[in-house]
Image (cartoon, rainbow, N blue to C red; front, side, top):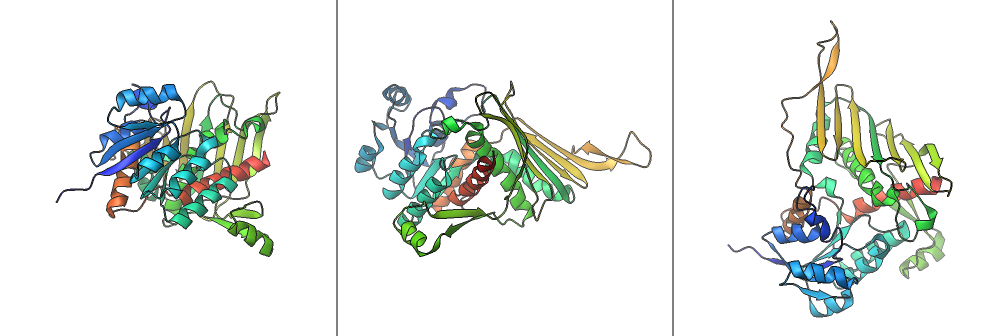
Length: 371
């Protein structure tokens, strides 16, 4: 039986949309264009970008696709099955809503969902109103190494603590960039928080955390129905009420270092730390159990189990678990696109949903409000 070919359109032909796929040091495919083109079940029919130079470079590599300078023009002429939103964070809400109201079968939205919870909840309301599912590209939910680490959690005993750390030279938070999202708390921190939630879900019998909307009485309900969100508040029901330590700001007032600490029902010690003073880029999560340890980061996965010590008589030490073969390739981008295909085929659920993306944003916004 011949399998259906799904047509896709790409909104945003820049870095994550296209050019990261040219980076020879990265595991490929590393951009939406390359991942879409490598999947035999997808035909990339159109691309859109407001940057004419970027658009021309993209078309030179995708000659069978039609190009547009604005998404409205694209939607007027095409009805793709999949619309990928790969624009800058400041344009996420606008382009996501535009894509949703055009009613494709699926929207793939780059992380973070939006610049704020207000914007994210607007996207959610439009998605529900139009019946359009949204896959958020929090790529570690599709990566083979993170999937292996999540499965291995059951082998390290009772989890005592999770420590996640992001290191870069970008400010953790800068109020002057509120309108652009050009700070690591939201730009890369969304990956860190989502990965922590991904592991916590495994400890919580697969149940995801959630964000509950709260409205301020009848007037708030009316404004919500009209699409006005000023009176809509939210409560994150899992990672909430952080204690902030290690707060350091530079001379301009930008946050350069902080740690957020949590107590949860499934793990008594969760810490999310971010540095904007580092002269290197680092992304790592350490999960400590009573009988083992998991260390995972960009480019590595290390698994440890309790074994009889070679150093001390009568003691046990953590030793590398040689019985597990760590995958050489993570397949993070390819698996994300395949999940979209499987979802449209009706054979799989989305592994990274609009709700899980909103959950991560809620955690980040609560941290931001305490900085």
